[in-house]
Length: 93
Image (cartoon, rainbow, N blue to C red; front, side):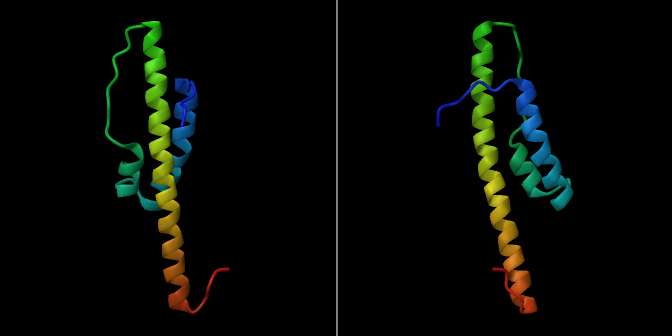
């Protein structure tokens, strides 16, 4: 997938909603939170104009990884609901 320019504000906005939801549902110490966030990185900004395009590419890659995690979270929730419903004798359609 071709990366598009992603400014810092859009990146933070897109990331904070899913992060807060995962944290609220699974708990702050959940493996899902850690997986969604990924490894912590520190970036040094020098102000070089080419630097922003590099950072935007990193943001796009991070968002793609987080989309995969969100899909995994949804699959996990579906499995949990299926198990709960089959134990109780109810099935979702």
